[in-house]
Image 1 (cartoon, rainbow, N blue to C red):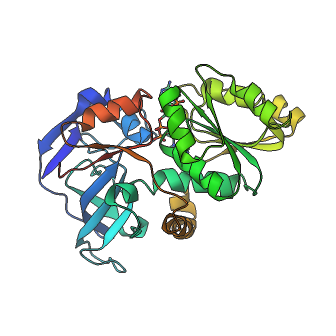
Image 2 (cartoon, rainbow, N blue to C red; image 1 turned 120 degrees about the vertical axis):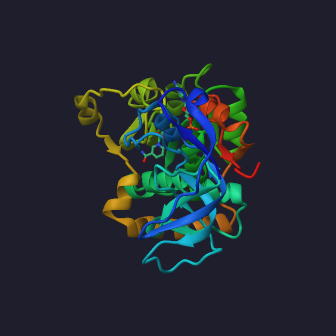
Length: 329
Ligand SMILES: NC(=O)c1ccc[n+]([C@@H]2O[C@H](COP(=O)([O-])OP(=O)(O)OC[C@H]3O[C@@H](n4cnc5c(N)ncnc54)[C@H](OP(=O)(O)O)[C@@H]3O)[C@@H](O)[C@H]2O)c1
């Protein structure tokens, strides 16, 4: 089969190499799947660079998230059959930037019939992260104001749709006019271009000085630091990631004097600690997809010739929505 493999870590555009290799064999509890579509996530770029929290042995195939068809069951696998259309995450080092990949049987889920393969591939990591951030960690209530950073990006676009579906008012912060159009199309009530406008001033004005009840922050750096200037009394800042490359060092006395909460979210940890919550969230996300309230924003379909460049552009912050790799192309 064809598979992209990383032999030495570095910039995604340089280290993702297309090779011909044998398909992997499913071990006990694993499932071999034929990849229909693989969504590209920021952590795929971090994996290529060797800066992700988990470091698979070299050479490895990145590609954390996919929709796929079950091809072969490992020993002891029940509840899923050959030919089933599924979605979820892969088991590295045999990721989804390949014709076949391995998944763990306990972290794959039925792909909603209402979504295309490309959309289904994008319903898992971003939407689960958005769901856990807004509902489980931040306890979002209808009518609250949610400020979403990188609102046209992968997890950000999901957070915008999920916050709207829950009855929130959404302020989306983006870098540039093209991304601003995308965030508005996703349903953000107000969009702020961080290159030309000050999101702190806009948020204060819109909320009559109160500030945002929830900040969804996948960016870190200045985006985080400035968010503390427009967080409401009893507001919640959910720390999702550091796409800016800078991990802020907040002054905790500020959280104390303003009565706001800093909430960390490492969605992947729920797979180990409370996997039943992931299944429950998937059911809710499937319902929302079937009602048309969430629809993953697939902005680019990448063939083999385009994948490495696409992952590089994602790493550079130059993409919107989800890029999806189609191994058959
Ligand atoms: N905590 C969790 O469980 C969890 C789960 C999934 C993902 N994440 C994290 O969430 C973050 C976003 O992931 P994603 O796949 O959805 O990516 P993405 O949002 O599609 O891309 C990152 C976005 O961040 C913004 N950004 C601001 N400064 C940047 C810089 N210096 N370099 C690159 N981007 C910059 C850009 O949007 P603007 O130009 O519009 O600002 C860019 O499009 C990553 O840090 C990822 O690791 C965390």
